[in-house]
Every structure is written in structure tokens, then in C-alpha cells.
Image 1 (cartoon, one colour):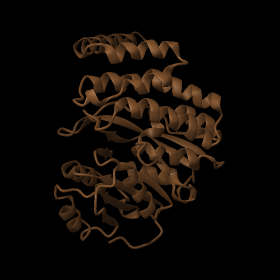
Image 2 (image 1 turned 120 degrees about the vertical axis):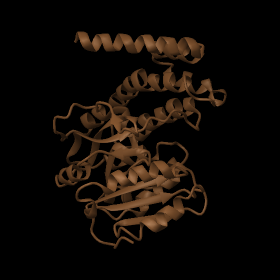
Image 3 (image 1 turned 135 degrees about the vertical axis):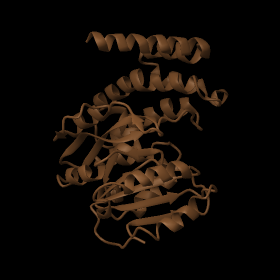
Length: 328
């Protein structure tokens, strides 16, 4: 068991019934240099696939790993809160059990944290294949640290990635100060509400463009896509951002840009792959895009277009995008 000592960083992994993914995640983490200098937490949401037995043996071999098991499945958001509450490091990163750290990531992260940022956003790439281990180009070109004195500019550049748990590094003390965190349970964005709340603090904000991890892309989602990525996401940005002290104009711009680009891709991707689309309620979409006529038209087409045609259009669009990149 890990001693209660002063760690610079806690990496906390919430997990549920994904033992094989968790094994890879932990293996790539434990292979890191300076791994003994950080605390590792696994918070198990009452898995039934042997996770408990595996972790019980693992903690005997590594003194900096702690394992917690919920007596019942409390849902993802509550499990994320458990991770925050158990962390003893000065900073805490919640790492998805299907997201895999790249070589030298921990060493780079510890070096960056010496600058004592209020908040840190990590550059990441998408996982292409687990075996062989292949990942694509990261979101940001690797050019070092992007340091911000303006938290507004930092949030604007981070954009929709404020929702990507594995790319967010929190100052643990600031997380502790956030009140009524339980009110965000069930939104699927509890980590993002907490992030925005901690950004009231003045100081350095950093985007580190070193490529830290390969993130898995889920081929399905177990929630109502339209509720989460329209109603809940809009509420997160416009209300959560306001509670964080950001201006309405900046928040409106962020919501528009991310919905026009990234959320649109989510709809295309998951409409082509998910089996639970009959449970998605289109009514969540229209109030969220009512004031943006171009978005209203775009999403009407995307949610009503037959899946076969949508897949074809997506292939054509991707080819045109490749041609455009080559020309530039």
C-alpha cells in the first residue's frame, strides 16, 4: 500500500469491467521513468470481471499503488469524485482505463508541474491499434509549453477538450475548495465543471504540447448522445463557465465552434456505429442550436439522413479533407 507521503502527482484511474484495458493502461504507466515518484490510484466501480483479484495482487508488488472498490456501481461521475477525494498528490490527473501513456510522459509531466500552474492541459493523440501499438498525430504540434497568463485565452484554446478527462491536470487543493460538487453527478461532465470552477484562480495556465498519451475512441456510447452533447454540454459551457467567472461572449464562441466542429463529428461517428440510437431524443438538439441557423440546418441533415448515405458522405468528406491538407 502507498504511504501517505508528499507526492507531486496522483494519477487516478476510474474503472469498471475493463480488466484487459486496465492491465495495458497500468503496464504502460508502470514502465514510465520516475513512476515511483507519483501516487497511482485505481477506483473500481464494483467490477465483476476479476479486476478486484488482479488489483489485490498488484498492490502487494508496488508501494505507490492504492486500490479502492465501491460496494456497488455508483456511476462514472461519482467514481470520478471518489478519485479526487482519495488523491494525496499536489496535482491529480484522472486517466481513462483505456487511455495509454506514451514513453517519457510521467517524467515530462513532473518537469512541467514544477512551474506550479493553476491548471494544465495535456496534448494527446488517438489510438489506432493496441497490437501493434499505433497512434496518430497529436492534436497540437509538439512545440513545447504554451503558457498563458490569461485564463480566458487558455479556455478558448482548450475548447471542447475541457471535457476530455485524461488531458486535464488539476491542482488538488483547488479541487478540494469546490463546493457542492455532487450537483454535477449524472451530467457526464463532472470533471469539467470542477475544472471550470478551479479556474477562478489567477496564475499560470499551461497547454503542454508534448504528446502524452494515446486515447481510445469508443465505438459506442451507453448514454443519450443528444442529451449529453447538446443539452448537458451547452449547460456545462454556458452555466459552468459563467460560474467560473468567464464572459458570456467567450463562452458562446467556445460553444459555437466546438458544436460546429467536434460535436458534429461525434454525431456522424456514433450514428454510423451505435446500436442504441432509438433511445436518443432529438428534442434535446433544437433549443441548443436555435440561435445558430447554420448549425440548425447542419444537424437537421445529420440526424435525419439515412445511416448508409451518412457513411458515404463521411467517406467523401474525409477524402476532400485529405486533399485540402495536401494542397496546403
